[in-house]
Image (cartoon, rainbow, N blue to C red):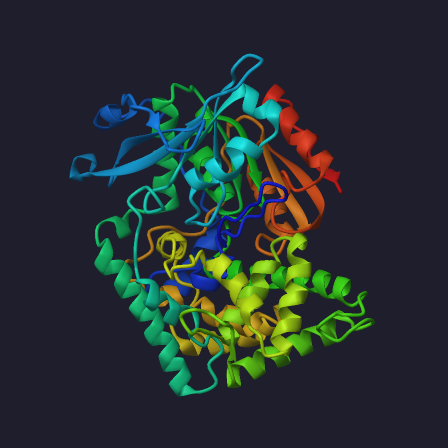
Length: 527
């Protein structure tokens, strides 16, 4: 859902959907959107590679000379470059893109720039570079590459989209996403409308031009101004969709690409949400099995199976729906069912968070919601002063432009509930209703599901984790099957993404590719 990573075992809280299933997924409006997305999925149209030569109207962007300056973060430099707001009308105005880099430290021959993106959509690549990648990536990689990040248009430092203020977001995040009656359904729809209207009022022009295709074209401008003939890139979660899109548009300029926690670009918004729902159920089952081996398991104690643990968690959610509990929050917020659900989901991204989740659930059963609220706040990127980063706003803006809406009305959600609840008895109902938000978006979707083949691209390493909650393993298999030069690398384990999460096999394989250009054998598996 977004981009949270620690320097020891980082995780991406951002994938198209983790927040996508939560805040977006699909988008646009119009009664034919579901049919259109299904038709596009059946056609499996592939993006057309752009001409190798740069159009004259774009030359001024490609020939920019960035003025690097101190970032205020030791060892890093920052700059700003421009991209056209509308690639079809380059004279219509510009978008300012924020860049950051940490130059190669040596020894060894410099290999150029390595762009990184942590996902989202909406995760700050600049923040990720400065907090983790520029200091936490393997030393041998940082020695040979200039580590570089660009915040995509509409994200963080690159003309960020804003939708609600802090109190408005507090109200939005506690809105009941499992409505029991018409009144609660109306309240949820009103919340989605208010969120969308806020985004539209803040950035009416930019909101039409924050698609993944446009962000990928921006990356080619960045590649050029950095002086690189080809793009070398590590993208996680949604960043895999961004990287694959780049490869589809610019196969001849594709260098060493690592797509970790891969997405399947051929799926409609509804199918993406449904399969991600199943992914979170898989992750919860793994958590529940681990919990059931412990005497202090808050979901039933030692010997409790995953099915019963899920029923016990649902019972806790139902209690919170009826009676939110105190949290000790300075702003007086109580723990609602919706906030508790997000807190649990946040912990599914990394098995290293399971102990914290057990402690938070234990406390919640004792009428103390502070632990689950803290997990939810970290997911939403809410700070101690009650302000929110623009992650959730950008997440919706990109997702709602990239794909037609998953659902157009509450009636469509109700009709799909059996499928979602079958995919996840624990999370299915909430995920289905969360997928309604793009139905009220002020801008129609410009993208559609499509197969990306990137014929002519250099080998691309696609990485999938077998029990990844946010980007199910099947998506990595699907993307690897689509990309003509893909090599599938499998991590047999838990959590979201694989690189830098403790598998020497995964790390050494990716390092060999980045440093020596040696891709793994297709189908290699690591534990």
